[in-house]
Image 1 (cartoon, rainbow, N blue to C red):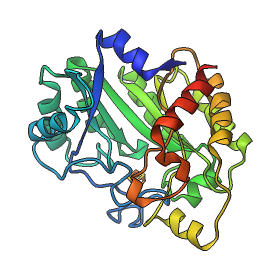
Image 2: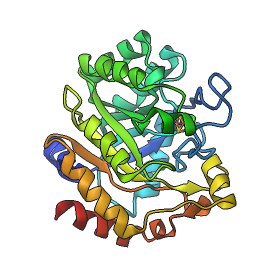
Image 3: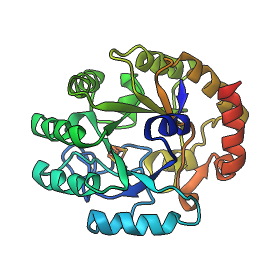
Length: 290
Ligand code: SF4
């Protein structure tokens, strides 16, 4: 396993910062195609709360750079389209939008969050073309490999759909990052480890992984359930211990892009310990690097 910060410096030769941008896409799990309520853990922001309202990509990039000016001296950026389903839309419109981002000298890579059931041929061809210009990373929200949990969280697709999308993307030379959520209701520690073992055994080898503990947010189905009937939530120590075991299963080449959830403070019901970001990151870093 490699840490993302090390991977970025090795790959791009300097510090690189992610800029959260909006493609203006919605999600089939929210627009009525598959459902209206979305995945049971997803807030109205589409699992990415920090993106600006839709403006041109260049405007968004300039605004995002301005916002982070005090946090980093980075001069190279990843154009990061995280919220909702960023391949769910007219491929021509999306291509123009993503080209606008990757043609900039200050953008070194394009990162697109999406669902595996929104990767038709035309979209895959478009991603392959963009990948010839600058590296394209596709982030797939798998969350779990267990069908029972997937149904309960209303994920809206089954595991073979993910497997096909993974194959299609890898055949086109596109980097894939998989999201898993640890702590979904009804899942045992062994269930979660099984999901990690599964993604660790994918061929070709998984490029990147985002592991996050469940964030129970206001305005989500899981949040409502929790407020009526609270279910157990891992302490930071329990989560750090689980994370350590998960990370030990990952192949050497897989990059760890995230190790904790990052829900908006204003919506967070539990775990409250997530709010102390510095302490959480130090504890988790210590656990995975020990
Ligand atoms: S697919 Fe993503 S954006 Fe859509 S409801 Fe689920 S988590 Fe939210």
